[in-house]
Image 1 (cartoon, rainbow over the protein chains, first blue to last red):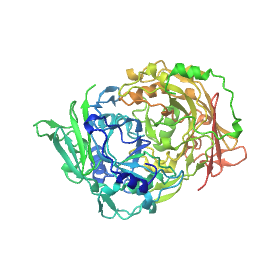
Image 2 (cartoon, rainbow over the protein chains, first blue to last red):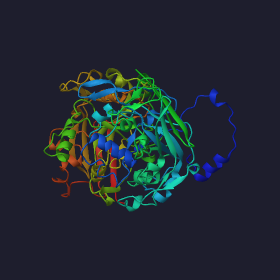
Image 3 (cartoon, each protein chain N blue to C red):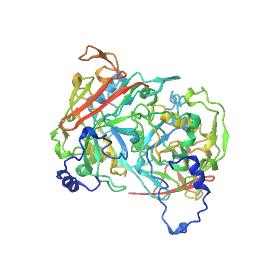
Image 4 (cartoon, chains in turn cyan, brown):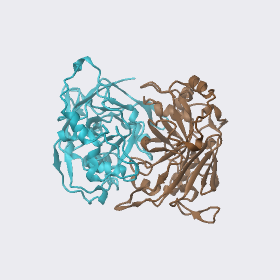
Length: 305
Length: 305
């Protein structure tokens, strides 16, 4: 992972037939997570969240179009696809405690750092991808009521830290196709400036067998190269195993929304599943599968406590 | 570290004369940091920050007296005492970029997790200290202008992630004395409830040879046991090497404030040093030493870029 693009290409060229059938082994995390940073880089997701939580106000925070907003998450609770997700409990409001009533998913890509960067040196945006060994699918499970009560002023904490699921395979970047994007407005500062682009990866989320959203990674306003340039511009360095979540990926249409928060408009507009049942947030026993073209899947079933 | 209190006592009883004089070796981090969580548990610090940033409003966020507020920081940029701190650069506002003009310190304790907790199981407040192998001094260097621009809605990120300095020695908890505290009001929820207490540790911060603050760990409203009970109540687990910052420790008096933000009231009231110079925030070349009774020191000098 740390040896860089040439070593990754050489490793990818090895024809290694598996020694054990997949069904006979337990799959663990594909790498040891160093720091986990979660970004917030989809314009439609950020806009929807703003409309839901600050109705009547300006949907986007003033800094959103100037920097790829992000925060550190809990690396120790990143778990592999298939790990059951126990419904978290916590404070839901002043003096109110119990299991979350608003358990949600977030459909994201996760970029994995291979080559570390030098201490104190900002990574230039045009060389940022040299540090990325590959990509995983990522479900940033979220408890919206816990998150809502705790989040001012220090940001998301226990509403996110109970589990973050990733797929079993790290897919090299050169297996993904790229698409051009429209120019960013306003033009970003020089350290973030590049020709606008995004990965073109079809994505979907399935809930109990019903596909509830179909979106695409080309909906990301900020690229992973810009995220890395921003993350390191203050002198912070990358370590092998750092995991960078893209943020929930939503498109402009309702069926392109990457979270139940948005799909159900915070519970006001239930969605219907193929079995005739409806959902706002997740119920015990629900199973969620995220899929990405060429990336496989990340799966998790909710269990009660 | 992971073996628990009996093993720690046995290790502490070993009489191991050092094989090398201290001056002949380079001291590294005393442990590998897993996740770094920074809390916000001093009532006077939180109140001062609220008065400075939200003048005229309610100083404390609505959740502050109900839970030990915290967020995840960057584990990969925790550095040992003596590491130079390069002035970070970043976005200071919309379209504005440069080296921070408001480089600050935060005087904290850092609690180090030895024994991991079980996945998915909340650690009861009365057993939380069994997981803590010891304590370090911690300087949570902060760039207030970068922090101010980025912090809504996801919390502190690049304003903190460039460096967090800790002392070279992890001091066992039983070497510290404890003090009773007044009851918390309102009474916390059952999972946070315990007889109110705090560690009684005299602390000071020295800037270029002038002691600029003298405070005490007994100013912490939330105990580390409560922080651990909160951190794990949602099912998140502790790993060996997790580092829990107490949050900046400030007392009620001006000379007891644990950050320059508070000491200079965000730059409005410069403090005077023994050499006749004044400071609001840190200048290049400044050296900061935090000291704690029985804990040694954590030291860092600011360098320009």
